[in-house]
Amino acid sequence: MLFVGTFLGNMLSYFFFVVLSRTLTPPDLGAVGSLVSLATIAAVPGTGIQLVAARWVAAPPPESAASPGSAASPGTAALDAALGASLRLAAVLSAAALVLVPGAAYLLRVDVGAALAVATAAAPITLTFAVQGLLQGRERFGALATVAALVGITRVSAAVLAAAGDLGPDAVMWLFTAGWALTLYIAGFLLHRDGGPHLFKAARHAWGSAPSRAIFRQSVTAVLPMSGLLVLSSLDMLLARHFLPEDLSGGYAIGAVFEKVAFWGPTFLATLYYPRMARAADRARAIRDALLLTASVGAVGVLAAFLLGGPLVAVVGGAEYAALAPLAWLFCTLGVTLALVQVLVYADLAAGRHRAGAAVWLALAASTAVVAGRHASIEQVVTGVLGCLLVVALVSAWLSRIPRRGAGARRG
Image 1 (cartoon, helix red, strand yellow):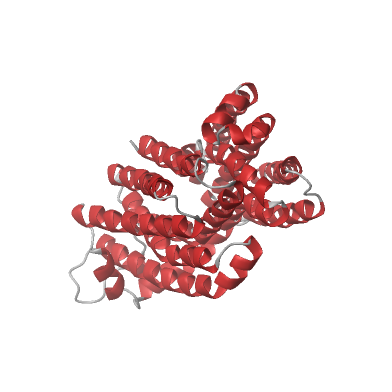
Image 2 (spheres, helix red, strand yellow):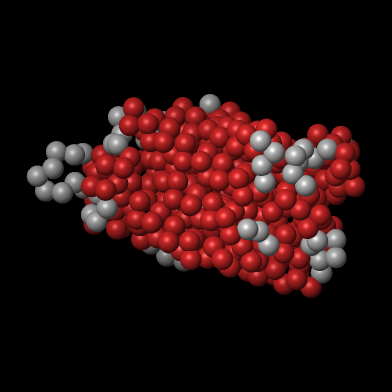
């Protein structure tokens, strides 16, 4: 069920661009693509709190105990603390996003109103990830699958409404933000219906508790490796928007749909094998199996894009983007490489290490430098980022084979 929900959510998210490509001009589509990539980066802290919240709820540590005299169980106290930490994190992230709005608008060549919509979305995105972590930790995979599907449903609904009203990028992004707010509301309802606490009441109650502060600190630490990966998955679209002419940036947004499908399609494999990666006896085989399965699924996608690039581009973007067909397989290869790097980052996190995460951050710097020096076409941007990613994949694979010092040390 989790696979179905995740797959549905991701596929509908990609149809967001399919719908908008029929009504927006290439420059406007490029603007929306870069803003959605910015929202993906804003979601990075949410991934950290999801991982930590799931761990605290699944196996509550001693510091998650309820306050003296409280009848709450350790698991319930952990739920409250995680929600309190998520509210604190959302507040910090929203404040930072609002400060950065003018700079983001300038760099991406978009209206301030559109960038402000992304900043506003930061809070519901973060809180939704936190609720997903609580559902994951409680092993409520049916509700978790529903929330994952809702992300795609609300996103494509925003695109349909924008297309029906012939709206521009600003309105598209405010509808995008409204979709995240609706998703958060329903996710909170599902959590409460399943016996969990009321989202905002629990968050306010546990805002300043010691467990909440501990989860906040651990989330900030845990976000570093995954943040590099998620930023890297959106960096090429941001670079394309900044360096390419506006019409070419619109074409890149269509190519990026192939990249995202190839990246997010096999992500359930990294999630599936994560517990086995955490067990020393199963670690090597789990990493190998996850990499082989991810590569196999990805190879099918790359081959399909190579053989059917023309029809697939016509479906995704329409005849206006036919020239992009020969590059479809390159975008898919970029996405598959990202998926392989994700497996290696998960493997590092499962062992309490951050080597692959550090390598990803180096790839970010290298990709930016390469594209800054070579960006005359869509092909040059995608191949420049792909080359850097292939290097980081090889480096991360090598690092994963090096035993961890002090294996008995506490995990971060």
